[in-house]
Image 1 (cartoon, one colour):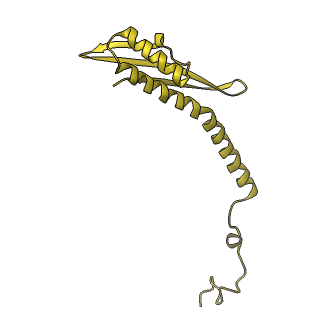
Image 2 (cartoon, helix red, strand yellow):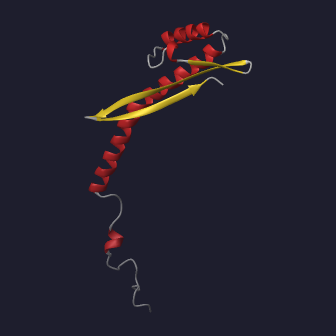
Image 3 (cartoon, rainbow, N blue to C red):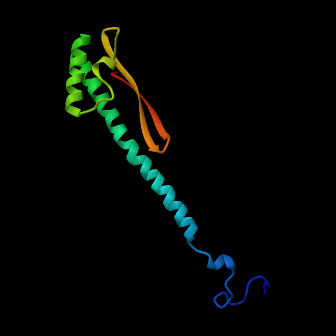
Amino acid sequence: MNRFRPADPYNAPLTRADRQRGLSLIGLLIAGVFVAVLALLGMRIVPSVIEFMAIKKAVVRAASTSDNPSEIRAAFERSAAIDDFQSVTGKDLKIAKAGDRTLVSFDYEKRIPLFGPASLVIEYTGASR
C-alpha cells in the first residue's frame, strides 16, 4: 500500500489544492476592470475606424470617376457630404499620375481623448489602388 495515497480516496481529507476551484473575488474584480478598459477603448476607437473606412471608400469612388484633379476633389466632397465625415476634405487629397492611372492618397491623424490629459493618437493612411 502506498503511504502517500489513502486506501479510500472518497473519504480522504481534502487538501488545500483540492478545495480551491474557480476565480477569487480579487481575480474577478481585476478581470472586470480589464474588460471595462477594453470596452472603453473599443467604444472610442470603433467610430474612428468606421470613419476611416468611409473615407477610403470615398477616395476609391472619386478616383474612379475621372482623371481630372478638380473633378476628383468635387466627387470626394459629394461623398463626404453624404457619409458625413470632416477629417479629410478634398483639399487634403494627394493626387498623382502613376502611368495611365490616377493615384489618390490621403493621410491624417485622429486624436481620441481617453481621460484627463491622456489621449490616443491614430495615424491613418490610405490610397486608391
